[in-house]
Length: 317
Image (cartoon, rainbow, N blue to C red):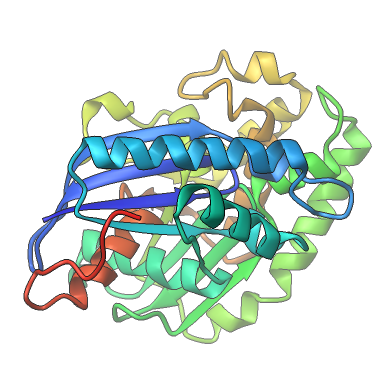
């Protein structure tokens, strides 16, 4: 059957269309992406502003048309931290449903961590042993750890690259004191949850998902995305520690000239690098591997797990 996952994230609205069957690997059929950057469209109270809601409605409507054009039988729409944490999130969801017919399921931060962990476990398999997962989105940082498909520990922290850039790094390039203050804040937040993971012992394999980690790995010399999914891509803490001071002195325009860094994400890259560096340091991670699968694949896999006959339960909204 043909499934569509509509991911309303803090940076992008991404429709991923796959051909999927229980027990088989989902095969990507189409990808439709729109840069929305909701995390940067919040007002001082954290609400999604009127312009942001208008753009979200238009973007969801466009994605819905693409899903219909591509023959999607079942659409799985969800939203993450930008909508979840906004005080006016319920109003945003109601307007999207009223104007597009799409009812977005809001995932909790723990849901995000657990579903992303599931995707990483299925990608690397049981031979990877105890997995530690790191995921930096636009609005939050997810960390999960475990031996099975359901992690033993999973947390979500409000340390997304877009959120932190918007709230803590207004300058371009940023003021050095702002960078130091953000570094202190990020490390204090992560330090509060370190014991939730270290008490289980050292992981056998550390993996990371998200565009932030992919871009940082590319800066450190990892293979380009054009070289395929199955090329191993890693990131060392040493390389990251060398890059962070350089990124801190660059404007967004200069960062966009770096290998693998997109113009739309260049402004957020420093905040993401600070979070990545802090997480790797405090969790004693020297090397990690980038996982091609993440939250969207986790949503698909969980849905397939609950469809033993391979029959779709829903329909395109």
